[in-house]
Image (cartoon, rainbow, N blue to C red; front, side, top):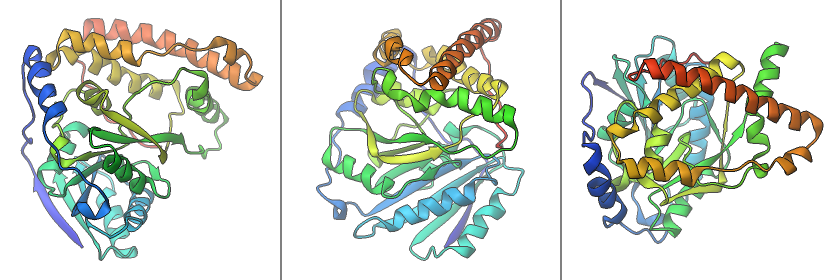
Length: 340
């Protein structure tokens, strides 16, 4: 079943002074009572939130995997998928309709929100939240594929850990399909960090490609921040990475794309003071910081070791350029990415 909505106004979001935010709002979300689920039959419904901007090339396979994962839920609850078309000017809407026509979705309500003003992922998620109602809220990027039982295992973790405010999936890279050896080279170098995670000290970090909340724990996002960062500063340490819930994603294949993506994250970090206290801004990076074990890196196969060292060198050089750029532009607003 496909339902359409049209949103032209920005949804409300918290606009709290930095010095009051941590003391009031974070304390509230840490300590507010939540409904405790003892098993899968205790909740009545789940919302899958999909914000997308020109996701026509990937959203078909992504939606197919989501619908399959919803079918795996025991004692099927009410299921809805809410997609926010954020200023799309490609065939994303047609791609969604094609999935609805081809795949049996009788047990899933699919809603479309047409947002004609490009506002970004954070505000798109806010719009979806305002137009959904189910007890479980799960945000999923439009360019990932969910492995079998991913949603089941996220829900299981929420049920077994009532103190946890947000659970999220582990990332794994999709194979990069291209005949361009230059792109293949940079895809490998810039993504090698995901292949050798055991050589970096384990750390708790929020990854926003697939994250799940109880509805009463959702915090609306301010427009400027990367949602991964915002959730780190709100929910950590009451978060949980679920090892048996996996999403496959596409990593970058050029230095320029890597630079632009990391620039937007650094820009968000620079603007955190608008929403959080100085103490929280200092605390989180120290907690997330990890030290690279160069002794273990030296023991890697030559191909991986050299690629990782090249990645660190490129990252260091680009960080210098990003800091210079943001020094002269404190209100940097990141652009939209083209897929592919």
